[in-house]
Length: 271
Image (cartoon, rainbow, N blue to C red; front, side, top):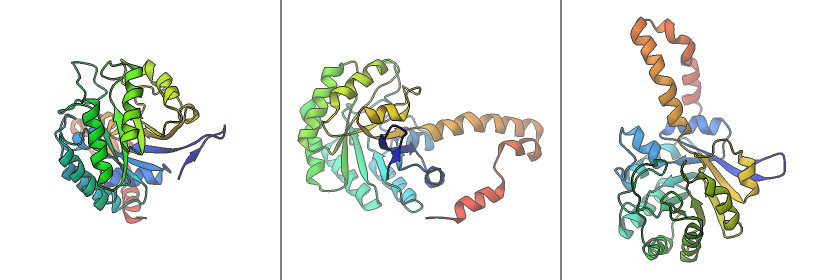
């Protein structure tokens, strides 16, 4: 399933979700893919996105989402949870739970969320990451998306492209290049260098002004609007709760919350 744009471009459009209910709303909105990001999953558990969640916890989330949605599920597996063995175990759990693809990045363990711009970053050795991709490929499960944090870590465009080329040679089905606000100017030129290498997957949170159609023209096959649902909840819920606490009357927030029948309709009509 893909989304087509006016100029003839087409790509899969996905949204980051953190539970079954958010997955149902994204599917109902007409998107093509569900992204189970580590930021969303970590925040849902009240945790920072620093390699604190496990493959088993993410597999549980996959099962919950698969029970209510038929859309492809792409799972963010961080750096494989610290070892080849843990990465392969996660792949097998994700496959059994109904995932469609597993994304693994080359951040050294423990990772830090890509969008943060403070502090130093360290990456795995290229050979170590390539070996992990090879081990995942030998496990013969779902698709493998190899993601580089080279731009985020300040290694530059040439290093990012070289790393992704090695990961493709190791068996990755698709590649993903990540940027944050400090490295966002490198994304478009890097995508031009990657065109034709393999499938390109992207979550361009740091470039909110760039339309999906432009990324499609640069060869991106799947684009994720990661963490949008999470941030929408964080933006809208606190003011509503504040008004409710101050007034002590449900009527004073009724304009800001869904009718109960809307909830009944959403949860009573599964695919």
